[in-house]
Length: 385
Image 1: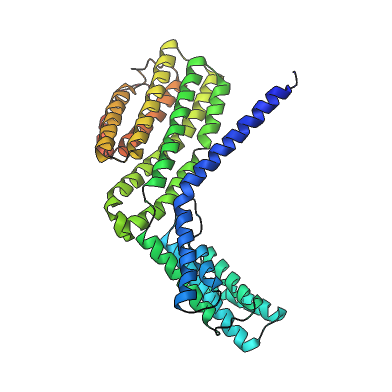
Image 2: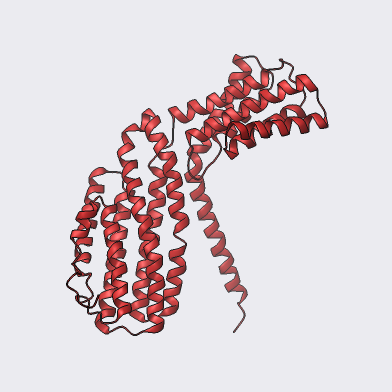
């Protein structure tokens, strides 16, 4: 095997840098709103504590607001903001009280830290709550005493927490944006997996089938990310006046992801079965054509469902869903081993894996379970089962 030339190496490095640049710009676009919220809350809390309350250098106001909002891939959640804000305030209040009783020093810092962590665990099981309460109490005892009085830093922390809560309540992120983007990513990946599985069957390529299985296994983190972001989306859609009108759309996305999760799991089983079949048996030409065409059709359907869930206009969403259901009706009608010309038991098992996947996709478009089942050909008259 020949070594790479300097030109090839340079091209590879350039491609990697371009990919990192694209990923970085995508993160900037996705995080700009949270960055603005963070900046406004932190600076606003500092200015309020300094100019309205007359505190000198109210760094704990800015710190509490910054930590309470923070950055999260799942979006800002009200519970998280409240949890961190209360943790900051209680940590500072506890540290100031203990400092007043036992003084300052190394062993005093250890006592304050230990008591804060244990008290936080007693009050709440949240990791962020415990971390912030312990951290803020440690900062209080390590930093010089404030010139404005003992409880100044506690008041500053409350100001920072309130600014964070008010900002996330009055100016929340759009609860639909992140789930839409993640669902679009999920459906694109599932569609590509289906097409790769179809190519593997058509070309009798076991290596491609195993590569397809590896890709299918990588879809679970995307499903988990959607589920996490939807928790934040539900909170925003319920609590924020600006976005309450979007509750039905968030619920529709939540309903769809339950079934797309099942589709992703079935896709992994399907990919593994395809690889096994290619390695151990030879399908008839008719079976190869019918199975690969069915997989290609499912890839088209998944893309259509992704378009429906990603689009903002209700009319366009309904149109895409209707198109997806019509496509699925056509695929479902073919899913009988006799119709597809399948003669081996392994091929029959593959068809039986495709049937529940079609049902899940139909339910993702809003169909009931009974309605989805009604479009599948009956198997009770099939004497080979």
